[in-house]
Amino acid sequence: MGRPSKAEIAAREAAQAQEQENEQTVSAAATENETQASTTDAADTESAPMDTAETVTEETKADDVQPDVPVDEPKDVIAALQEQIKALQEKIQSAGSTPSVVLAKPEEMVKVTYISNVSATNILDLGDFGQMTGVGWVIEVPRKDFGGKFMTPFVQKLIAKRRLIVLDGLNDDERIRYNVDYKPGEVMDVQMFDKLIGMDVEKLTNIFDNLCAQHQQFVATRFITAYERGDNRITRGVIEPLQALSKKNHPNGLFNPILEKMNKDSM
Image 1: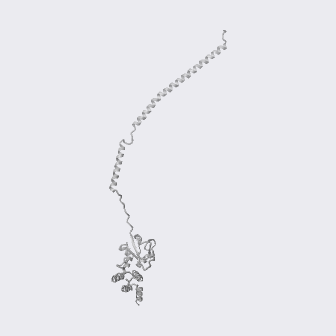
Image 2: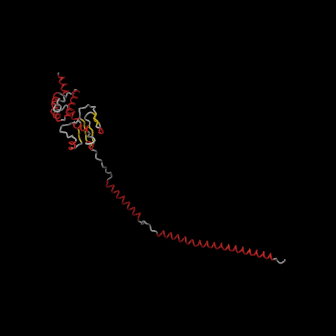
Image 3: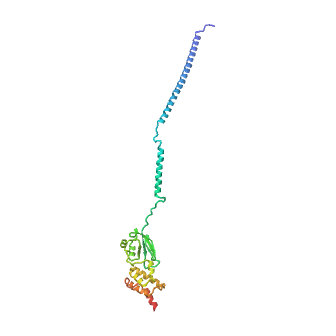
């Protein structure tokens, strides 16, 4: 073998230098990896105690927190509710098993009837307070309305003529105020008028003499109708005294139709 040339020596040195450099690079990388691994392990080792410390701290804090409500409060609440229930039961028992009912006071009414010399089919219209057919009907007017809404000029006229008669529902002062303070025997209801026929003459004339002019006229109409129907209780002995008394308020008398018919039948 010949002696290597300078070029071959230079190339060989360069290759050796490169190989050394590569070995150093691999060694450095390995060293770096080991360092990182060691660092990670150390970090994990350090973090574990920290987590444990944090857990312990949270548990300790949880143990240290005192509840806002005393432990015995549920028992106190239950006891208070039981007292309230007991008091409520006692209240219900004291009030009785049946609840008390307050009844409203019934509205006071004024009873009114119509007496006049009209036919049985005559209709008296009193507006909101109803109608009366013929005579003898009775309506009830609220007492609070009697002196107001009910007391129209038309009603006042009927009261003055004693065609509209107050039977009940007013005190003495109200009767004077509304001109319905009747004198004893001044007015009668329909039932009493019907009883007059066949009544003892002395009692009949006494009643008739005390009646107002309007009711005397109504009695005369009742007697005339009964006579025309053939009622044999209507005699001259009954009619002549009544005719004489009726002339006090009616100059010509009220029983002329009966007397004229009697006179004609006697001829």
